[in-house]
Image 1 (tube, rainbow over the protein chains, first blue to last red):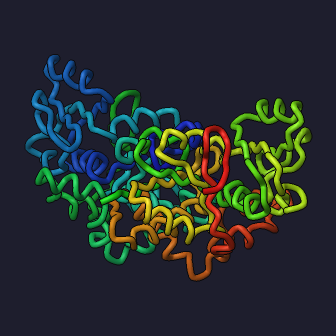
Image 2: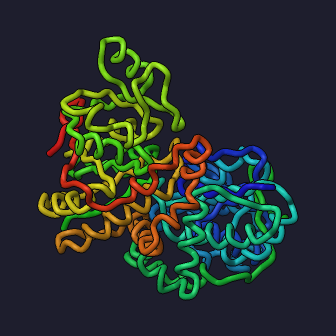
Length: 236
Length: 236
C-alpha cells in the first residue's frame, strides 16, 4: 500500500519529507492555478525562482518574468500572479521565470521528492489518474501563506487525497489528510461560498485581485500536469 | 477587537508569535489533560522541561519526575504521561518535573506570549470565561505530534475558539482557526467516534495506553486553569 500525507505549510516540510513520494505542490490562489493555465496556453517552460533577486537577474538577462509579493506585481516584472496574465498571446512557446510569495519556494523544497507535480482544480482528475497509476506514495505540499496554514490549499489537498484514496492501493493514517478530506467534504457542494471566508480572499479583494477566485476553483479544464525537470517546469 | 489564532504545530510558532496574546497550549492526548488532572488532585507545582536530560538531572536531585517519549514512560522516571498516573495519592502538595514528546516543548515556546495557560476539555468553560474577561488576543498552540498537524489538538482548538468567538470582543480571519472550528462542528456531536480515526489513538492503542481517551474528552470537570509562572506551572 502507498501512503497519502498532507503537509499544510512549507515550514513543516522537513517533518513530512519522503524521497519516495510524488510531491504535489499546490497554491490554489494563485500560483499553481496560474502555472497550469500557462501550460494550457502553450508556455514552453516555467523557471520557478524563490527570490526576487533571482527573478530580477533573469529579467536583466532578457527573460520574461512573472513576479509578485503579497499579490502585487513587482515593477521590474512583465506581469504578476493572476492566471489571467498567462494568456496564449503572452506565453505561447515562451520560457517564463516565475517568483511568488509562497508557491515557488514550495516547489524548490519539494524537489527532494521522487517527482514534483503542480496541482490545481484545473487539472485534478488528470493528477488523480496519474498518481494512482504511478503506484507511489503521495505527499501534498500546501504552499500556505507565509508559512501559515491556509484553507484554500487544504481544501484542494482534501479533494486530491479523497480521490486518490478511492484507488485501492492507497491508505492514510495522516491527521492532516483526514482533516483536509473532512473539510473538503463540508465545503465541496458550494466551494465558492466556503472560500468566501478564507483570509486570502480578503487579501486579494483589497487589491482588486479577487476576480480569479471562481476560475481557480473550476474542475478539470485540462489533462496537462506540470512537472519539475531539473530547475524548470515542463509537462508530463 | 481581540483576535483569535490557532497555530497547528510548534514548528509554525515563530509565524504566529504574538507577545500580547494569551497563549493556550494544548496537547489533549495526553499532556495537557494530565497537567489539568494533576492540579485537580492537588499538585503544588509542575516544572515542565523540554529534554529528557533535564528531567533526569532533576530526578538525580530528588524531584518526582514524570517523563515519556512516544507514549512510553522512561525508566528513570516515577511515571509517564497518563492522566491516571496523577492521582491525589501521588501528587498532592508535591512538585513534579514533567517532560513529554510534544507538550512540554510547546509550553516553553509559548512563554514569549503575555501569559501561558494549559487547556483541555477538562477545564474548557473556565478557560473561555477567563479569556473573554481578560480582553486580550488569544493564540491557541497545538502541541501536535513531532511537529506534525494532529486532529485531537485541532478539534480542541476549534472548541475553544468557537466559544471565545461567541464573546462579542473577539474576531478572526485566521484560516487555521476557521478550519478548526468547522472540524469541531463536524465532530462534536460524537467526539469519541471522530477521535477513533486520529493517528494518536492508534499509537496509544498499540501500547495499551488508549484507556484515557474518553477521560481526556470529558468537558468541564474543573475550573482550575494551569498557568506558567517563571519556569513552573501553578494555577490561576
